[in-house]
Length: 136
Image (cartoon, rainbow, N blue to C red; front, side, top):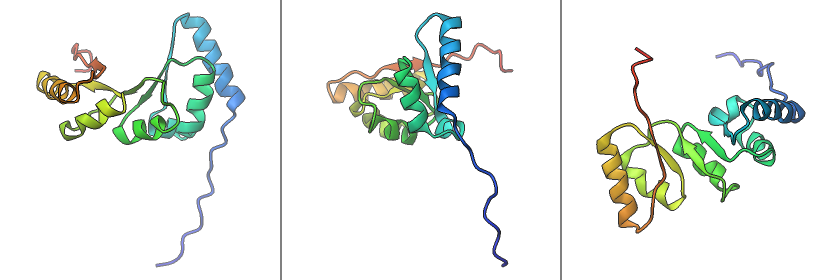
């Protein structure tokens, strides 16, 4: 197999633009905001983008997976982090221990996660996904 040339594309993130955009949205919404930084902040770098957004006043960080949440938790111990995607039941205690908010997709999942939190004598914050039928 022939060696492929290195990728010619790259991402250059202008943090001043992130600050500006967050500020504009904050002014329009006039309420606390969650910065969604899933998928490595859509290529911008989750840790770097999160630093910018938290400094600008983001009160929550949103990610897609447990791995993304744990990466952010190493630096952001006090900022709430919400996993927007599905997390398997067998890692429920990891969520509790790291104080990560989980989106729940079913009653059965809620019961399992609740039992895991109770077994650790702690609470688990959750976000309940409700299918309103708008996506059908």
